[in-house]
Image 1: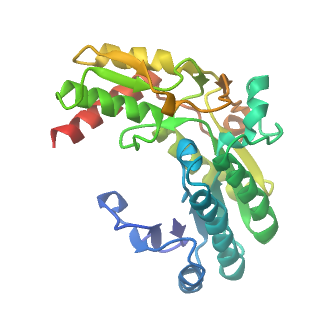
Image 2: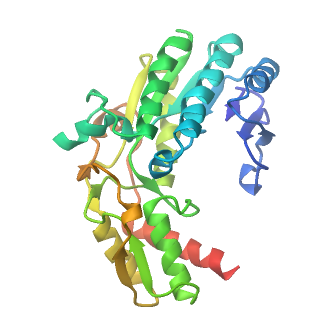
Length: 298
């Protein structure tokens, strides 16, 4: 996403596919961030004051079998973007959405703050760590660089590559008679720091508000500071389901060396911005299930 300070209409959203109605007043530009000539031309003509970099191969499980795509997008595309910023928007605010996955093994020691060692455990996390480090070198020192490390976020419209969206999609199909009454799962006894994606977006907005006054670079955890197990979340969904179903473990959904519990401390973000999480997991799951039902009904 690229923004000029004025006028308000000067806002671009870069998308790999045709943009949908969610863009509203944004002007969609279809492009691949790995395309160096395309990115160079876009930045040279637009010269944004604000860059929000959210493009990624974002699935940890998919990264195991798509390492080349993951590195090409998460690191290679970020490198191309950074060079374009350095050449044509050296004074911009640059928000990079990294991931809590970068903490990796450090999460075994309990809730982490932003100073915890980066010990990535998978291809996706390694590509994000590498991108963070590369940006420190390639972005000019005049750039207001902010790194957001969000923990597990979810919400209506999420892809079924992610655990809760997989659950709500399966339940909606079971209710509609399109799937036998059996929900397949991975390890549901791991605990995660779950956030509603709407809270996460509000955190990004608050970061942008204070970015001009922050020490460069600044890293923020986006988290609640507490965990719930996937089993507990599934129990919530069972209460909302219109049909009973059994639960069956699918070995293909199991991750090697999964962290039993992963959570982050959000003191820094709460202290330096006006943000705090507002939405409860139960409401988020209810909204996701309603959205999945809506899609099935179509």
